[in-house]
Length: 106
Image (cartoon, rainbow, N blue to C red; front, side):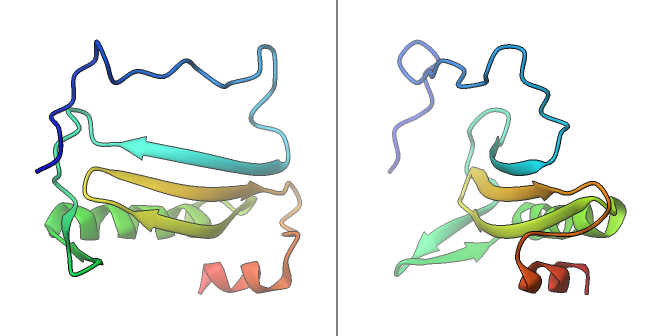
């Protein structure tokens, strides 16, 4: 059983660059956590993630980003029981750096 989230010991300092404009073109690694760090998105069984209803919703929302915003492209992502890691590419003008990323809109 995973250790319960404790903000007194489970904390990280921000790695954001002071003054950096995160809306500019670039590749961004993001982590999105469930608010209370509860395992609501799914569970790992035999080294495979099995999604719960909320996990399916998170997957749909992740994919929706590329359809909703013409300058956003999605690279790899992984959904864990209580968080998501993903790479978002912002390219104003709609040109992604890797040709296969165009497929994220289908």
